[in-house]
Amino acid sequence: MSNSPFLQHITETMHEKRYAKRTIETYLHWIKFYIHFHKKQHPASLHDEDVEAFLSYLVNIRHVAAQTQASALNALSFLYKVIIQKPLNLQLNFVRSQRQQKLPVVLTPDEVKRLLTKVEPNYHLPVSMLYASGLRLMECVRLRVQDIDFDYHCIRVWNGKGGKHRVVTLANELTASLHVHITKVKHYLSLDQQDDRFSGVWMPHALRLKYQSANKELDWQYLFPAAKLSIDPETHLTRRHHINEKQIQRTIVAATQRAKLTKRVSPHTLRHSFATHLLQSGADIRTVQDQLGHADLRTTQIYTHILQRGGNSVVSPFSRL
Image (cartoon, rainbow, N blue to C red):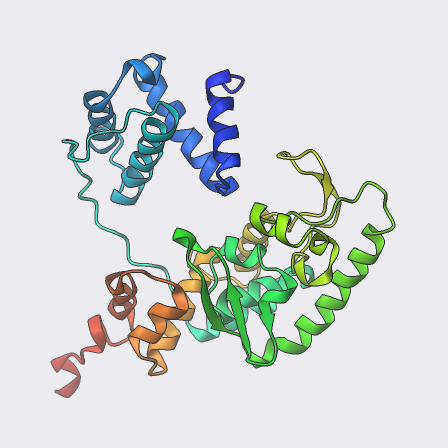
């Protein structure tokens, strides 16, 4: 099915509409799953009731969380609205997941310090920034050189989750390392410009038209570039992409083992730790919400439930005995 003209059409349409690579992969996963669930019938011959059956199956049989079920619904909504051009009913009737969201794993400041001392040097800076600025993994690897504002000690995050932009803090302790690192990026660019195949860094379509020579300027290069040039699957041009996020994931897993931490640590654990430690230090929850880029304050409030004194920092009466 991977060579299906129908799925290829979906992929090309999403590329044209500037969907992120990760979103394209996720939507294709759910669309293929949906087609297999209905015994490989073409989605055009299916509609509301069939989508409802699939979404209910995910909960009743697969026991997926609400967020996973919502991801599947988003993919199928796109399929019927954009590809088949027969939108789904807004009042679909299906079994909704009641699985509670798990409390996030959070490291103590000492555990963060132990972890960072065990991260291999090549990835120490991006891993440090995940914690220092509360970045999502993909936000970190997609940073451009110009997104670092040394004057105001901040980082500009463009098109984060939900397509939102925000400004986050930059730890003063990382500025020297960042200056040194940007010198390395400049060296990469100098080498690339001597290569006739090099077509500049990938840029969003509108900016590509507006600033036609910017793709070979330092400011637009990825802050964490890949070690090798590669072929852009969309345009088939030779570019230097950003580092693969899986490299950072593997690096953190290895560092966790070397640090002998018993908690299960991922890149997102560092973001959870950033938020919790900000609240512990007295930061206002609205400030933490802005730093994390949460649209709903209730999403941020989960961190108040894991503070050392318990939910919302309530002191147990036992402590006063």
